[in-house]
Structure formats: structure tokens, C-alpha cells
Length: 187
Image (cartoon, rainbow, N blue to C red; front, side):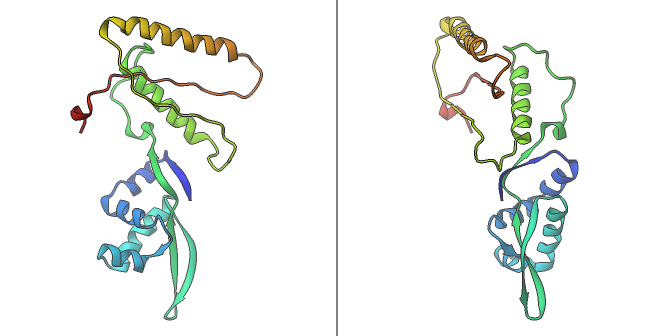
């Protein structure tokens, strides 16, 4: 089972975006038969198999085993991944991509879409993928915002200059800085 399955085909999204199929897929986090899932969801095995069949066709689940039960062969199925990313290209956008203004929220959305697509293209089965993720909250007074952003930009520019040569392994560095509401403001 993969950690992340990137959905970039409309058929995959259509197969996944049905509440009953999402529930079936959740139950298939561990290998199970349609009969076992049906008992958990209080549905008929035939109804569950209908959803499993659509998930199989879309590559969102796979048959991992088969066993003989009362003279018939029963499939054992498992979800293809622990989580699923829906490609922003499938959702679409009204209008064109935002102008590449580094200080606009539209640029930030475009950047996150690029990061998502880059990560999805990696071979996530490789154990030697060097990466780092850092997240934290900081507080900047309004009168310090410009100085903070200038210092952040200069720090990053120094890194790009120091490590931006043509030799060595290629990495992408993406930094996002955006306003965050207080914990009570978020729902």
C-alpha cells in the first residue's frame, strides 16, 4: 500500500468522490473481503462488491488474495493508498493562473499546486528520498512586516546563490508565508 495516491484522471476522481465508496475504501485500509466490509457497513456483499469493482477499475484498490469459502472463490481487497491527493488540474479554475506576483495569495495557491504535482511525480517507494518539512508559527508586528519579508527573501536568495550551481542533486525549495487566524477563529 502506498502512502499517497495522486489522482490525476477524471475517472479516478469520479470513482472516489462518492460517500459510500469512501467508506468502503476506509474499511479496505486492511485487507478484507466484500462480505466483511458489508457486515461492518450493514450493507449487502453485492452492494459492497459494486463499489469495490469501481475502485478496482480506477486503480484505487487492488485484490491482494483469494480464498475459498463454501465452494466459491472470495476476493480479498485492499486500498491502494493510505491517503489520496486530488490533482488541482481536475478541479479546474475560473480564469487564468494568477500573475506571478510573489506577494499575492494567488501565487501561493499556484506554488502549492506545483509542489503537489512535483511530489506526486516522485517514486515514493524509494527509501532514500531526501526531503525536509518545516512548519511553525511566528508573530510579526505590522510595522515589522516589510523588514521580515525582506530578510526572509534575502536569506533564501543567499541559499539559492550558494547552492544554485549546475552540479549535484536538484532540489526544489518552496516557502509559504501566509496570515493565520487565532485558534478560536479556525473551524
